[in-house]
Length: 122
Ligand SMILES: [Zn+2]
Image (cartoon, rainbow, N blue to C red; front, side):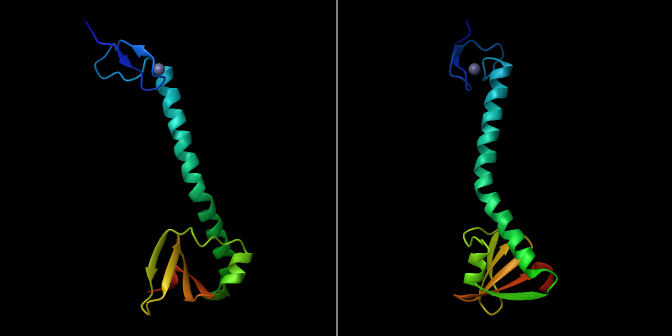
């Protein structure tokens, strides 16, 4: 006789028809996966939104220039969020550089930054 198990989706007890069955029915499985997908999307949004915003700000400030220097105050005023970046590295002269996709924000000093595009560097 087959053993009752707890449905992974709604935790009701059921007897699986197949050995690998985890959900009591198809709809329960779909609902569970949809809820899981929504949680993942919500989690990503908390990071993706400020990152996208930083990208837009850097793109707008740099425009078609090769590089632009701006103060921390200016970037703060533009809504730039220093906590969100895609990677951190150091320049050859050991200055911290934060990447936001293909844009790079180099910390020239605690109050001044240089913005450039990744493909403008070697
Ligand atoms: Zn269920």
